[in-house]
Amino acid sequence: MPDIIPENSIGIIVPETINFDEPLELACGRALVSYQLVIETYGELNSDKSNAILICHALSGYHHAAGYHSEDDQKPGWWNNHIGPGKPIDTNQFFVVCPNNLGGCHGSTGPSSINPETNEAWGVNFPPLRARDWVNSQARLADKLGINQWAAVIGGSLGGMQAMRWALEFPDRVRHVVVIAAAMKLSAQNIAFNEMARNAIKSDPDFKNGSFIKENTQPRNGLALARMIGHITYLSDEEMGNKFGRTLSAGSFQQGQYTPVEFQVESYLRHKGDTFSENFDANTYILMTKVLDYFDLAREYDNDPVKAFSHAKCDFLIVSFLSDWRFSSERSEEIVSALIDAKKNVSYAAITSDLGHDAFLLRNERYEKILAAYMSRLLKDPEKPKHSVNTPEAVL
Image (cartoon, rainbow, N blue to C red; front, side, top):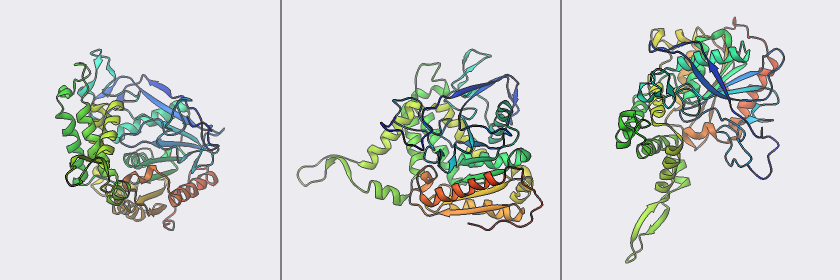
């Protein structure tokens, strides 16, 4: 932890494990007889339990969204810039809940957990999941916490997809949904990137057809390569150029003194891949990229997003970043158009940034002001919104 804790830090946070003994029926037709979710909470739940915020994490995220885990912790939670006292998601005002998704590898039941029927790690035998399974498990979590209705469900990227699914599956249990850098379904290009990453993992000899835990190996090289593929897509060309250019981290092109060279961007990606492979489960990565691929908000609604959103009762904030080519602003504008046609209250902001898809995780003054302004509305509107409104709000 930094020598001086910032005033707007929530400080040291202790995760909590919540156990569920009632079977969870999954979209694939199978069921988990029991399971657990690891969560972190920040702030205090008010007396009428109307100030609860659910944070849905992205592909490689988990429950540790803000604060620190120990005094020696040098890295705060993945959304620490935006959650805390006085920050856009103000923990002086809101009770914030962030779970590690089912199927994860940071304590929630997933492929690296023990299958009670075999007493061995689930591995590739863990049931395939859909975003609706996460939403169902989170609804049960809300029940455990005594929360009948979320003030808001908020998510970026894959988390934004979950947030939209919440609006359709439990329309009476959420008042606002904030969708950041997401889409109603993946493009073919995005699916292709995910398949490349999965093949990188599966081609590692240490993957052992997914039974690497049983075989006491780890497909670190494959997982590192998968992360490198993914990370490239999260950054914009401009950001990579500004950050690295063609600067060398080793070697020389000097005439007569040539030595093998390595560009800074190469060493950066290698570091990112190696670090990720030490902390993430390969089967979880495969599972979660497939959840991304399978997600299609309107599939069960005759492929009509307007018909899908007609089931929602909440208000929406949609945010995109102009340099994000993985989840482009055009995809967010499709969401906005469908919401307007479904006569839902929606605010939209397209943020100028050169940080690509990763911009939703990072500091940006306009982004923070828009998020903070929208969150302040929730404090003025603690009651469930009326749904007879027929015209959308002005677009930001």
